[in-house]
Image (cartoon, rainbow, N blue to C red):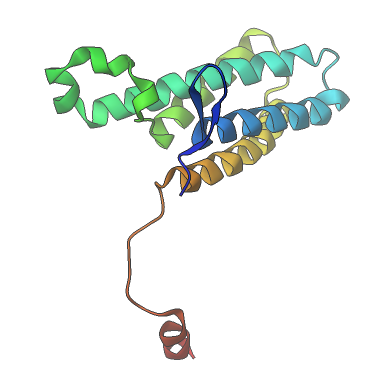
Length: 158
């Protein structure tokens, strides 16, 4: 696993694989959503705004969900709630707050909700695929270890 990809020269800063994959996923999803929204939105800036608000709301929601999930740890050291660079983002919290932000934005600007949600869903799946690659590079989200060989399991199924 490669949680740190490389160090930037002269500033002695490391580039983390998870963060880089999140940025690549966001940029690719934004590009795709802007392309898909040309047929029903006159101003592609609206989709860019949705993506930015979704990113912010997703990170805040993911952190809040983690803090709620591990509230005993954060009760002892409340300042660590702000330390997102040390990990602690949970998928469900990010999705819940991001979807709420999207719906509020669409209703506020009176945009076509169903078409917009279709476009955002496609972009979200693209971004999440890069996020999962980042998870594997980071060394988390890999599942439970097993000693069962694939060949043994395959023979049992037949």
